[in-house]
Length: 330
Image (cartoon, rainbow, N blue to C red):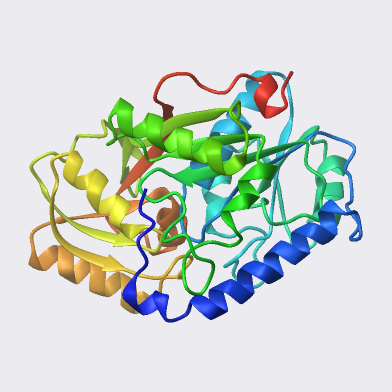
């Protein structure tokens, strides 16, 4: 595992130590029931992570929502709505889910207890708490934790010295773990990571499932024409993204045989401007390339009606998948 500290972050270890202690004390308050935990009148499954940045929570939420619907539930997703444009009901991730699953109920509000009650009033009978591992105020029946297989714990230090939102001992709260982006690891490497996760969780029986994110479709816009994921093989592309891990888009494009000639990267949840779009179109025109983006970005680019290709990513398990009972659907 990649636990080697970055030289610049190493100097911040006192602040990381303080952050970890504060997070640990806060968790203790909830564990000791000194801070109140609210319950909803429906099963709640939290999907979260230990680190900042993208670990694949949104594909996991989409997979879990679809699974719940197949089992006769009416799922609802509860999120804080980080990066939401003022006045909008949903942020870019919520809009992406709504576009792919029009039947999905959603509420976004920093007060997730109140928003959860609104979900139930709207008819939800199975609540998915997005990015909820550290949101202890709302009771959850299942804590599903996503860990990126390439660096499950970053450098092992808490913010700002590292990527951890809390100490690795937080694993002890997990009901099950998805080891995401594990597609490039062999069986021995996956087994070693699973053993380490169970060791830190102090639970030899903790369910851990390896999975990967893979392209499932390519869409030409405007118009929404469906194409096979590898339809751009051998072509040149300019990548446009505002996601937590833009390097993942490049890696996927290259795996599909696309020649990446330029990347335009913006911070996660960035709202595109006319100037951003003009720069992307100019770059593609200069390079005689297509413009390639993600589903999350596309919901913010739709208003510009520019020619682009949109890559859809799905979740695939490398072996066994969680049973319905393990994710609260029994």
